[in-house]
Length: 361
View 1: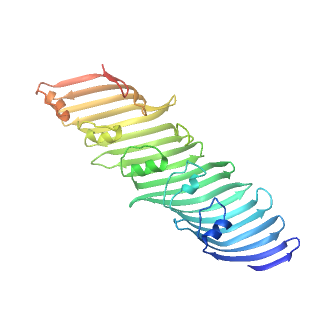
View 2: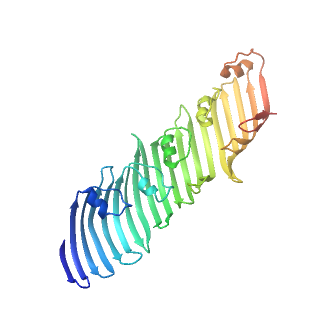
View 3: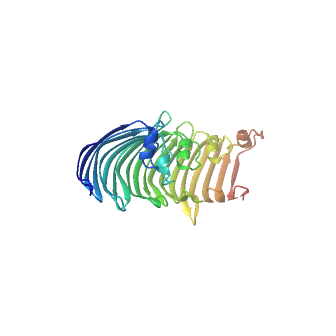
């Protein structure tokens, strides 16, 4: 410490410069707030001026690391007060490198489980409310997966914990469906790789993914294209997914590839193509419009169209089926059932029912 204090009796006229290099984890645990990771090295250069009731801190350099891979670099300034809100006019430039986002998730479960993450941002605090602007973050997943995001969080309070004013633009490249499932705590079909871009906005209680453009899988197997909006409620509640408005297109060289979506075995009937509109109606997420077909040369053709009230629980099925086959053998072949080679076959009817029971009339 170097500098001067004009009046020791009143502790006024402070003008001090601090430099520090600490490599004692126990000392740092005592010095730093409990909310921070348990750093084991810290160095800083700071200048403090002021007097009773108010200190101005200019942080020229603050660097801290821990064995788990957390690294924090800060520069900027703040005013420290004796009374609430204790910190005022905080303006910091921050760069961080973390193995995961568990520290941030303690304030909001809406934050995805990503890691490792590198990020830069400008942090401010006034009236006890923290805001983070100009966020630029990158996360990697496996050998080829990458997530890039930029945006801001305009309101973070700690007592009680509350996060709102989140606004991000994000792009995901080369990740697997399982990595996304683990990140957002939602079960998703295992179609990989996934590339997507979208905007995310809201709070820890209510948020939305808008302008979503997503592609999963690849040609030669199963290819899924989706676009639209997803609305998310309280992540700690029973229904984190509150509403959906998605347009989906599916293509597969063989209908058997659809098993990854249905969770069961689908017969290998032929080339599949389908388009669907996923919508929320009366609190249920369903298929508002479906148009699908399966073709195997000139021998076999199926057309399916209609709706499903509840896609999650597979109920309220209301669809039209039209099937044409060159002969009975063409129908039995995908099911390993030997049928006689009789004349052409045509079946048409309405499909009604749910996961437990389906009827064709």
